[in-house]
Image (cartoon, rainbow, N blue to C red; front, side):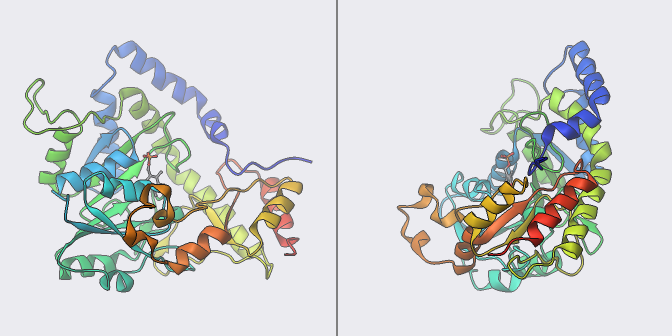
Length: 367
Ligand SMILES: *Cc1c(COP(=O)(O)O)cnc(C)c1O
């Protein structure tokens, strides 16, 4: 029996191997490896792709979010609203500044947080909301923008899973005050190593971040603020430029596969994800819910279908927060999701036969 992997990073890179090799050669031959022309070009191209005015390449997605918060002067005593169901980087970005992540349960069906729920958590210490466009689906950004304007909060997008997703026709990355992207290899736009970027329409914020990511320096050896070293290097920028040209095509293929799953998976034991109105998702992950997850996962494996779990433990229950009293409260949706979510195989290079195999196997799940 053929095994369908949950994702296949090499398959995507093989498809564009010639261009990736040329990109490598060009950087090698340039003799310039940090803060050069490849990065400048990628930043311009990615800003344009996101309909944002500015893009600042950084070392990874966590740094992107952390630097945004620091540049907004968010720190000790401040509160930032974050989803309970997300990759832990969303929370650590806040904790690293000394501010407090305030947990918000998502909608059970879309897996995204909602503005009307966030409103209940706002008090005089609240400085920002980080919306996570989870699994590749944009949050309801008109509602979040209205809320953040009403209470004078910063609105930050964690777009690490959603390169190219749109909300009411507008690209993520341009829908808040700033957005953090990750180019971790498994993301929809993935490097051949770590990478990240910030997009924003604010020139002031962009200039500050450009300095902060590189030792607080715009002019070499002049350090105006205490910055960090978190730069997207020339090689990764060159690879990402090649891959950016394929992103829409690959996202389209992800949507085609997801649409087949939505239409052809028909099993009362398997709850399918719901796409909110006005959203065009990019299906970073296709996450279903099942009651007896261990059994279902074993059954699918037996049928040659590999699955993963995103995420097996809600953020507030992670060991890193285990001795902080406020995180011992129950967040019922996240605690249900952590036990029921299951990610089916989905990546652009999946063949139609592999998609058939997944659908047939999922339709046979009987528990
Ligand atoms: C991947 C991811 C990040 C962090 O990105 P890194 O590049 O791994 O630091 C942040 N938020 C979410 C939702 C992610 O999926």
